[in-house]
Amino acid sequence: MRVGVAGSKESNDCLVTVKESNETKIVIESVVAAFFYDQIKATVEETLKEMEIENVSVTVEDKGALDYTIKSRLISAIKRMTLDV
Amino acid sequence: MFRSLLFIPGNNPSMIQNADVFNSDGIIFDLEDSVDINEKDNARNLVNNYLSSANNYPSLVVLRVNPIDTEFFKKDIELIKTKKINYILLPKTTMDALNVLEEMLYDIEVKFDLDTVKVIALVESAKSIIQIFKIAKHCRVEAILLGAEDLCNDLEIDRSNEGNEILFARSRVIYACASNNIISIDTPNTNIDDELLLREDCLNAKNLGMKAKSSIHPSQLEIINEVFSPSKKEIIWAKRVLEAVEKNIGKGAFSLDGKMIDKPIILKAQKIIQKANKYNME
Image 1 (cartoon, each protein chain N blue to C red):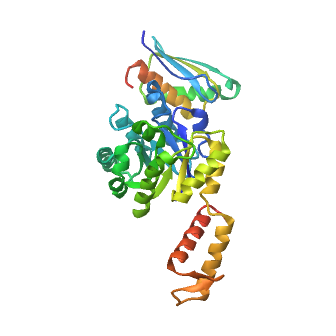
Image 2: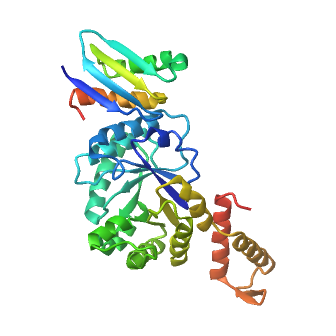
Image 3: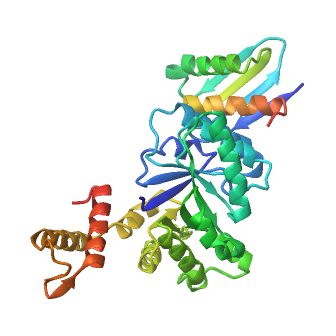
């Protein structure tokens, strides 16, 4: 199974792990989930759509990252998974 | 015109999201030395997405790319497509490196109909110090930044607090910039906890002729901005000179407080007022 990881668990960052899967699954663990779960999920979904990526398991361990940081880490993780860095 | 440029590591979200609030005249988003070799892609993606989607940006954006002989250089340069980058900071600048960069920038600018991106040449080797007058004349170059740490490595010498070992290099940067009407930027001071040393270092550089200084920590900006701005005394003097000019129209030279005022003095006063206006000083 191919895996890509990017980011960190530092404040204002997030650690994104992407794995090959039979279906698209998104798991979000965030210190601000109560307020921003939907926004983080939407950012992940939009980024996957932009990159035309399906059938991956995405885990976001968020420490208060802004949208562009989440998007950046997800792109890096996907490219690392596909070795397109 | 700027006094201070702050380096921010390209893979640090906490600093990047505050890039527009730091008290520096410009921000250098660094993809080179402050980024681990295994995180180059991550840093490039982060800076790219920040520049493409953030709500607020620094008033002046500089991107330090990786050197031309690395696998990262070409992808780094692609970030000019964000249309937010004012300057590329080219590490280890030589004429050969500058020409490679020029060709790549031109191709991307034409292909994507972009404005011309200017270059800050980072001179940090003996070779670049020797070539500096050609570098300063290059049409893309609007400023030169001295990188003393790498230069001293190249020369196999140690840095000192006094900076005597970089006097020749500082002087070359200053004269190359002044003679080509571009901005000379002093090397950062790496002793981030020593304010007295920073102030002395800034004054030394300014008194030699440097026009700005780079910094590696936000805590250094207040002193850098203060030293590289005109003082209140200078501004008062410059205003008096320009007022006296108005009262002495038609005279090539005249006297103020017993001292001769002529064209070079008037130009100096005008530059002080120009800087004071730029930095919102009364």
